[in-house]
Image 1 (cartoon, rainbow, N blue to C red):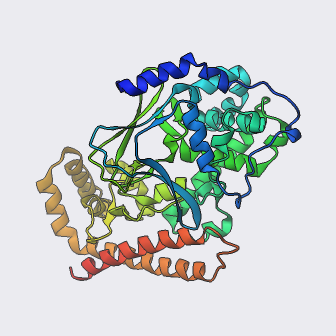
Image 2: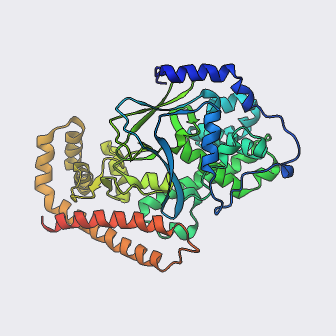
Image 3: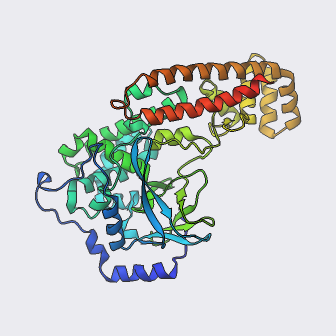
Length: 438
C-alpha cells in the first residue's frame, strides 16, 4: 500500500470530521421489515440521483478541489456522469479526499461479517476461484447495505449508481451471438463469474432468502462491485464513493492512492486545463476488449487491439507472450513483432528442430537469429497473416449485418456491441491495407 502525505487542509478537515462524530453517521440500527424500508430501485430505467449523493458525500467528510464537478452525459445509450474540472489544475494538485469511514473494502467486510462468508468462500476456493474472493466480499457488503434500504448509511451513494450495464455479466445469449470470439470469450468469463457468485451467495446467511433469490438485485450488486471497486493488492479491493466517479481514460489526469489510515487520495497526474474530464486507468489502454467485457464501454481512444489469434494461445504461452503483446494498431495498421513471432513459431511446428532454435532465439533475445528465421519464412508468415485478417473481416461483416437486423429497443446493448465490432473491423482494415502492399 502506498502511503501518501495528507494535504494540510484535508488533514485538518478529517480531524474536525472525526471530532464531530462522523463514525456515528455510519451506524445501523435496524427497524421495521424489508418491505417497510425504501430500497434502491434496480430497474434498468430508474434514473440516477447523483447530486443528492454529492451533497451526502460532502457532509460525510469528502473534500474536492475547487472546480471539480460531476457532469451528466450519455454514452452507448446509457445515462452517465463524469468528473470534470472547471478550473486549471497544476500537476500534483489534490483533487479529492475520501475518509476511510466511507470506504468499502474486502478486509472490512471480513471483519464485519466474521465467519458468515466462510462457506461461500470455500465453494469459490474449491472451484479454483480464490482470486475472486476479495471481489465477492465487496459484493456481499453491497447486498447487506442494499437490504437495509434507506436506513443504510450508504443509501444516497447506492441510489446514485447506474442500474443498466453493458458488460459481459449483463449480456444475454443474443448479445454473445453478435461478438467476435475474443470479446465473446472475455464477456462470457464475466457472465460465468457472476453465476458463480450467484451460487456462492446462497450460502451467506446474513443476507435474506428474499434478496438471495432476486437475480436482478444480485446482478446489480455484482456489477457495482466489479465496475466501481479497485484492486489494491491481491487480497484487497477498495471502493471509495465519489472516487468511483472518475471514468477511464487511455490518457489519465488523476492518480488514486490510499494512505496508512485508509483514506482515499486523488491527485492530478499532470497539468490539467479547465474543462477537462478527470480520468483514471481501469486497465490496459492498448487493448479495449477486456474493458468492454468487464465495464461495458468501448474506449475508442485505444491505440491498438489484440490481433484475435485465439487459436494460437498455446504458442503465445510457450513464447511467454499474452494478449497485451499481440497487437494490431488502429491508426497505422502496424503489427507488433510478437504477432509475427507467434505465427512463425506455429508454422515451424512442422519442423521441431527449427522451431526449437527459433524458440531459443526468442528466449535469449537473439535478434540476429530471429530475423534470419523471419526473413527465410516471411512468405509463409505473410500468407498466414493475410488469411487470418481476411477471415476475421468476413466474420465481422457477418456479425455486423446480424446486429443491424436487431431492434435496439429490445436489444439495448446493441449500440456498444456495434461500436466495438466496428472498432475492430476498422483496425483490421488498416492492417489489411499494409499487408496487401507487402
